[in-house]
Length: 240
Image (cartoon, helix red, strand yellow):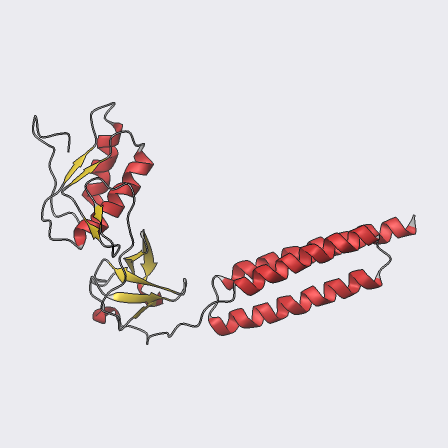
């Protein structure tokens, strides 16, 4: 019937518009505050237009109700994603950047800690939360902050957390029982903490097993610039 065709058309229209709003919501994560606010404004206008078109159509009542409910949820989600205003520092020249500097990452709208000196390279590693990312130097701005609040690490052998949330790193990381990907992630997190501590030498225990974990960890450590030197553990010292 004609009524069913119109309802189907409205459902199709609604699905297309919802897809557009999802894309706009994802774009919010990459846009600066002013651009994000404009996206939200446009999305709200699209939502209102969708509701009006559905109301003016001859679609079935239950179709209209379900569409309006979904639109309301989408609108609420968009409003929650409105970014907080952050002060952006001035662009930094690569010569000004040094390991330990707090930098503003333009593409992520976040702050992080610089792990490497550029030294002519176009990319450097930046620690954001508990995640180490390789980013373009051109997308970084030097922040005036002296340090960031240290994230609390989980599942790190030998680490103790005090009431203030700071992490006291132990001299040993036990990777036994983990697969290669988990072990590398834990090693990266542990090295970040050791890098900020007073330890000059630490031990990584990976066990014997098939030797795959030892090989992957050694390959990882060989490429990591935070590691000055490494060696295999002696008998009775533990597999390192």
